[in-house]
Image (tube, rainbow, N blue to C red; front, side, top):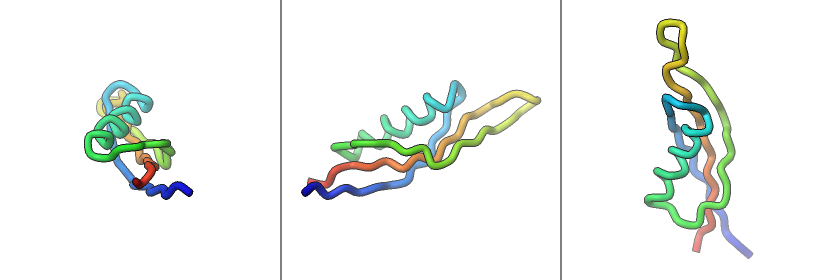
Amino acid sequence: MAVMKTIEVLSDSTKSFEDAVQNAVTRTAKTVKNIKSAYINEMSTQIDDDKIAKYRVNVKITFQVD
C-alpha cells in the first residue's frame, strides 16, 4: 500500500496557465520527490491596461511518501 500526501502550491506565469502549472511542479520538485499528480484547484488572471499580465494557479500536488 502506498502512502500519498498532497500539498497546495500557488504559482504564476506571464506566458500561460500551462506554464504556471509547470512552474509549480518544477519548483516543488526541487524539495519533494515522487510527485505523482497535479490537480488545478483554481485559475485566475491579473489584468493590467486591459491585457493579461499574469496567469495564476492554485495547484494541489500529490506525491508518494517513502
